[in-house]
Length: 287
Ligand SMILES: [Zn+2]
Image (cartoon, rainbow, N blue to C red):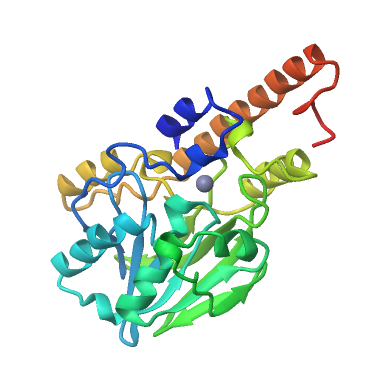
């Protein structure tokens, strides 16, 4: 989100910038197999994942509506049919992850699974006036299963009130890996977030919770958050015996650390600014 948030940071009173699409985010990225039955089918920045099972496929994140043709082309390039997507799951109620839900539903008939807490916000994204489809609501700890793949939802509130991370297990060369697709820990530009009551406390609890997962394969809703492009390059050059570069427990820990710091810096900035405005809008911990 970095680029568009930097831009929107200059216009904090116009949430409409949340809906503008940063340049380059929808550029195609080569689709590839990450590990086991998990494939990357997202754009250069907006991460979408495809779990391929004998009973059809699970797609995570439709991204912007204009991303859907890019995702579809990636799925087909890998040799799969887009119509084999049976379940579409979401991470959080921001347009760069769920705006394309209606189009995916139209093209595939997939069941659309959304976190209960983010459901109302998700319904607000209606490109072209289309109704936002939601077929199933999930809560903390609930699972989505298809053809031997099971994903578990983890509530990670802050970036949105109902931000959901998803975990599963992938296998490679006889080993099992705890795989974690994080929601978003991005709180470095608080003014563009929802700023619901309790958001700051939620973020802090989420950073604590983030450290409790035994993450081995680390993935995220944004390619840049988990260094996807660099790992993809390494994967192309991987020799026999080399570890899959997506196995990155240390990278995950460093990521949590870095995003906690940038969040706390944003809170401190806002408190300073709020104090300057004599407790005006955007002041401190009461948010
Ligand atoms: Zn977001």
